[in-house]
Length: 90
Image (cartoon, rainbow, N blue to C red; front, side):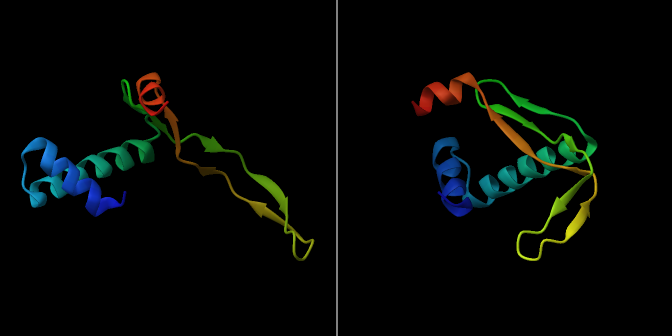
């Protein structure tokens, strides 16, 4: 399912127009991104938790050339599915 298919499904299930469903989905995604930028977690009970922990700076070895390179500290987005989602999928 791509974004347009998701928008159509949300519109059908909620009774919204596709434009309203797209605006709602875009707003939800933007809210999650803003929270993760601040370092907050977004917990949706029964669905899962979005987080963005900080990955420490490290030295890596480039496989093709063998040279070493420093990778700076960075936030890495993660998603941990909740029990309700796991149960629904299985």
